[in-house]
Length: 619
Image 1: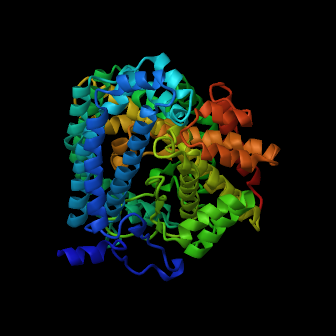
Image 2 (image 1 turned 135 degrees about the vertical axis):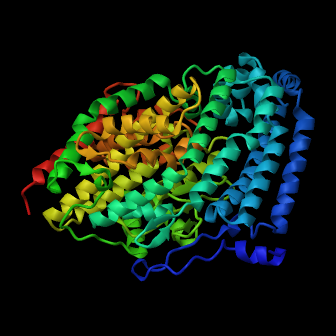
Image 3 (image 1 turned 180 degrees about the vertical axis):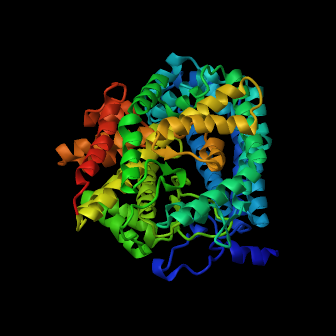
């Protein structure tokens, strides 16, 4: 492909096939707010500038921070460390913009060789560039605590105090400069390489259903089809294709688990999830309490609900392909894109016009990519990019009620990212303890808006059931995922895991979490293989359960005292990563360290199930 042709293809990221008439026109994002094309002179110039400034930064500051700190302490008019922090933050923003663009282009079609090469080359160059910058945090963390405390207490460096306090938490696990450089440089050929292998393998898979060869997203979508035969065929097709590729997925899982074990051992992490807890800035005992509370609630939540659902279907137990099936004898609503947009924006506006105004920008300014396309990254995400730009949302929209909730979820992330951006590149990112709060809260607002419009008992039952299933998928399923990951990583310490062993671990946690009313038949043992979080972000999954339970508690506060809540809520989001989660929850009277805290969120799920039981027999 020539340079001119490449520019034409990527100026707006390749055109998609015409959307189904019932959905209406689906938006495709324009990445031109980042760069016009993958070979644009602006991108070339920014990359060259970033590489040049990274080397200059290293030349100016490597080995000199202790002396500069002493100078700043001695002379109140000296602000060398503040200038260094500002230069470092500007580089973080610039390189983040380049990396975000490459990632978004790649996610549009992970099978296209031009995009693949562009993404791979960009990752390698950014990795090399940041090798020159690794010293900065390491040297800052070697400064005496009293020195940092004194300097961070006075302006202008006081602006960066939350960041300086935050990175000090990494100090016990940091290694010598040369080892850190080696870990960083080798990441391109270790973790990053196997992440990419997973993505490209998943994108290339085809699942034969009804005489068609589908990619993963449309195949998974058929598992919520109203016809049981379709759901069963889709489940069989997914299981067959995953089974044929299980050797590759098991290999990737083994390599990444071992890679993590090596890193954890060198850094002195005791538990397999401690590195994630540290990056989330959450205490291990808090996560342990969450996981224990959810596991103890399995009988009251998932076991109870699926027994109820099986009864609705006239069965003793549901096959696994019926777990998320729509309720029988109810018309299935398909939401056109404009209906989904208006529903979500309306729910947001009822809560906060300001929040709705931020979300509306995503539609008006082409920040959303919604159509399903061959090769497109599966699932959905909101990419924060960098504070100097704006977030982008990727969906695979197919008009299901769950797709409307997914839109609400990802726009919640987007609003959060926009509000946090003024904190700057170093303090805008939010730890996972709160990263899912805005997204799940957006879902809750949308659900409540739809429920208020329910015109019949059957419609209310369908909506309540869908919400309960979403909450079970967010809380129960994700904690089961977390338990599965723990088992895999712990077992991997004893040697390489066979495909059969990984499947066995998967089935053990799924059976425990879903209960006897779900029949986990042949084929389901392979379904761990397509979950991207296990590959890209080990132990990320508990953040969903954390966020859902937290949002349930927040929503309870909102219902009891709505006055002023929206302002406090938006202020919490605007803090980004500049405050610890405990400090942000304090204005709402919530304490996640209290063991009883998790029961508030779980109790809301239990209450919805009880409401569903109360609707039985009503028309």
